[in-house]
Every structure is written in structure tokens, then in C-alpha cells.
Image (cartoon, rainbow over all chains, first blue to last red; front, side, top):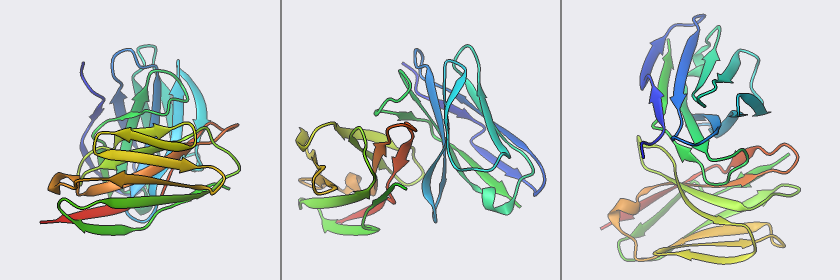
Length: 113
Length: 110
């Protein structure tokens, strides 16, 4: 069974631009969560989607948004990029919402110049 | 609020045993999970303690004590490939968010 995939793997943007990241969960998994990982802040929860509905949202500004499609694939969008948004963005899937075993993708490394 | 504290770094030699602690301040949670992340890689699930006590999975064991607000991951017979970062995590009731600890970087030396 294929693992969680994320595209693109690397991205360079400039301040003020927007970006869309994509995540395809493991087949059959209906829950997708997004995390931001930085050296200083560690793994920070962004949001969780289940059956196309946002279940939870972390403490991030409204510039960070996401959605989930009927095939469980998910996208997250960051608008008006700031230098501090440079991070590794990880997506994780689980069978159902609230799962304790999450399967992570390789992440998208975003660099904002 | 909720916070999970871990030592920032632990070092050990091959074949040794190492314990990575996780102390938490949260009003309640469903259980304690552990994840491993190699440099440049994705976190991978190691274990989950729903109840107090010890859970053993091969060379790795995880322990939880809710009364002491404390848990740990025990790695035995250390191998070079165990060099990685280790994160504890809890899912918080009501919000149902998965909160990760600060992470511990383990370096195993020959």
C-alpha cells in the first residue's frame, strides 16, 4: 500500500506570494492533518480534516487555510507569505479522525525569501 | 494550556540503554504516543500508551504514569540507526488536537 505523498517536495517563494501544498493520504484513510515543523517551534498542529470537514484548527493566523476533497486528498494554502513561514510542512493521515497512530508524508520544505 | 517537555538532546553508545522522558502539563488526554524522526525524514509512529504502565515493542518500550504526569521511551541495545529525534504526543480531549512534545535528539556513538 502506497504511503502518504506530498507535492511539491521543495518550494521557494518570496514574501507576499501565496502557496498551495498537496497531500494524498494512504488509500482508505479519511483523516488528514497538517503540521508545521521549524527548529525553534517543533511540530505545530495546523488543522485536521475528516470527510471533507475541518475537525480541528491550531493557533495559526487566517492566512493558513486548507480543504479536503471527496477522495480524501487535501490541500493547504498559505497566503501573503512571510519570512517566518519558512518551514517543513508535514501531512499525516489516519483511518479515522482522532487517531493516535498517524502516518506522515515526507513533507514540503518551503523557503520564503 | 498544554505542554510536553522533553530533554533537547541525549547521547549514548551502541549497545547501551537510554531513556527519553516526557513530562506534561495538560488537564487531561487520551494517551501518550511516541514518534521517531530521522534527519530529513518524516516522523514515524513507534508506540501508544492508552493506560498507565509499560508497553513493550521489541527493543523499544514506553511507559506512562498519569499520576506523575510523566512518560518515557526506553530504547535498549542501541544501534547507530537509532540516532534520530524522538517526540512524545498527546491528543487533548474537547479539542481533540494532537500536541507534540519539544523533541529529543538522540545521538548514538560507536
